[in-house]
Amino acid sequence: MQIWLHYAIPFLFIGFFIYRRTKRTIGFQKLSRGRLKFRLTLFSILGLIIFLLGFVHPIHFIGYIIGLAAGIGLGLTAIRHTRFEHRADGWYYRTHLWIEIAVLVLFLSRIVYRLAFITLSADPANMNPADPTQFTKDPVTAGVFFIIVSYYILFFGYLLREEAKLDTAALTADNTSEGSNPQANVDIVK
Image (cartoon, rainbow, N blue to C red; front, side, top):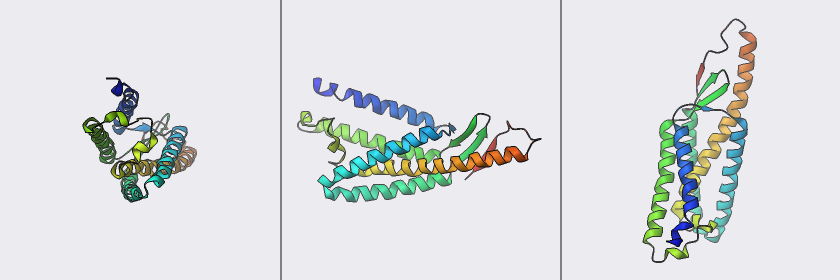
């Protein structure tokens, strides 16, 4: 029983991540430059760490490359279908629902696979959850991780660029339309 106790904290974090990700998938989210910069930095650092750990097993770079390509494809599709809306308290965006669901399903399926692998392995005590090379022991897990990382890096970078454009567009629109209603929603489809 004690073997499973040290897996409790990672599972709580994963559960919290899944809850927040699912909550964000539905509806508009506020466009926040600070939050986007933090997420972009976090995913970049995690991706770099896992990439550098891959030098232990160079064959895993195939999974990394496939994951990067798939993540870029998902990101470009999501970018094409992202919608922005201006409200009284700022800009909001809504991602493409099916792309977000696909990324979430990929993430969840790899967690379920790893749980089944740990449960069915001969000696689960040998698997250390604090060992960062756990992500690089399986090229499929690393590939799925890179799908998620490349998708979010591309998408958050896009949102940061668009946020700067939307702020300048909103300022010029406010200056030119003195008689219009500033509370009206502007729906921009990109």
